[in-house]
Image (tube, rainbow, N blue to C red; front, side):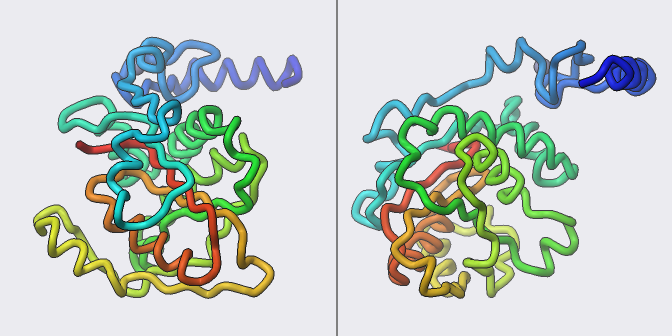
Length: 230
Ligand SMILES: [Zn+2]
């Protein structure tokens, strides 16, 4: 950043101070989206350090995974819930990107085999309404760190499932089976894929996307999300 750019940026910051998306405190120079204190205090899972972590175990007996991780624990009323709310409903795409970068930094050492990053798609009408897909923002952050392309054309969401919070676990599985579609080109087949979503709860959405990819010749599937809701 040049001296003039720095002065302009500082001046802009004075006029329109930014606040931490997790605790609301005013950010100081050098902080981006999340204050240093929150960055230090967030409930990191460290799942990327353990192959048999709770996210990986969710998929045992369902689909074979190369690796699985979530960056943070999701609890109701927590700072993590605020962060997820901001990237999903408040248009905070930059925050999604930043959290994606944080995932990327953690999975970088084991990422050599990954050929593609695929965000879980939203239904077209939902993406139009929201203006973006939050999983794509997260995927872009991961891609920046890993230097691996993001593919948003491969998977499509055929059915708008709406909110699933009130359905029970069994119904959710049944409900997800035909939700996604795939349009794969022969060149892409046999690639290793990293599937990305914002929050993982039952794993039904990621299982549905993952089994579709595996059934269409993709291999070495990995999963990464910002948050894991126990
Ligand atoms: Zn904070």
